[in-house]
Length: 342
Ligand SMILES: Cc1cc2nc3c(=O)[nH]c(=O)nc-3n(C[C@H](O)[C@H](O)[C@H](O)COP(=O)(O)OP(=O)(O)OC[C@H]3O[C@@H](n4cnc5c(N)ncnc54)[C@H](O)[C@@H]3O)c2cc1C
Image (cartoon, rainbow, N blue to C red; front, side):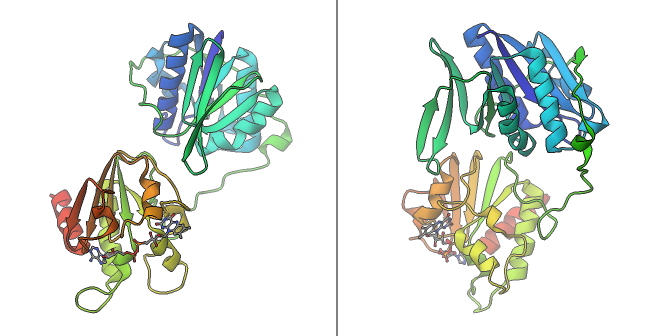
């Protein structure tokens, strides 16, 4: 293996996202193990600030496709940019973070290059027989390690798979690469962004904490009444103050689709579990959620687990949580929010 290409795009604020920096750690580890050359390639509106933040990463060259045409995510221009970057380097392996922008175009670019793309991989490694890519199958139950014959191999790594690269910023000398864009490549324009329902972004893959709300938030409480709007206020306040990512149990997201009084910001995208997502956060707090197995399998990659439930015999008490607070989640979270306010 001669060349590893680290590929990334700046986020809307011009910085490199955490998942990109994690991919840089992976690219560097490949380079260290194989003795290959590391090249960094960026595409986007203005790539200089992002390149400067990784100036000390040890890349022998920095390449960039930049300009107004590449500022917004768009299949045709992003694919043309990545293709041009890859053709000018001819790397053996391309390593990048699995952002939605990259996931959308990487398979198409791999096809154009006659190579092979792997999305949402969890590791990339090298041994005497070449490069390997690890990924999970069957809802994270089976881990496979794959080798590909095609060249180049384009690997997008899922968030949380590696520690984010940390190192010196500086002044990167970017070699400008031209990507040809015909008229057909600029037909699509991004005219705005719409967040789901409440307008609040509740899913934050990079958050330190996963806050899960279960159906108990919508159930009758000790006074015989439901308190859904208060539940909403408490949960949104918690999310705002802690910047946690919001998960939901299947019961809570299913009820949300049934037209009764519900947590308005909860959608199926928030569902954690066997038929939902398997997020990766260092810590998790489940509230008003029973902790049944089909839900808790979605916590596979949550390192430290805590739960608040009125029921001392709930699922979390059966070895599924590190700490279970047997308490009223309304009371506890009101108090936690007040403490965070202080
Ligand atoms: C094939 C299959 C796939 C499934 N996939 C998923 C999945 O992907 N994700 C998933 O979540 N589920 C899944 N389920 C459903 C799962 O088995 C449970 O039904 C679901 O997780 C229950 O949701 P819950 O704990 O929020 O609700 P409930 O079981 O209704 O629990 C509510 C809890 O809230 C507590 N509570 C109420 N008020 C308070 C209060 N004031 N303070 C503290 N606690 C309170 C109660 O004690 C209770 O434990 C699946 C089921 C099947 C059969």
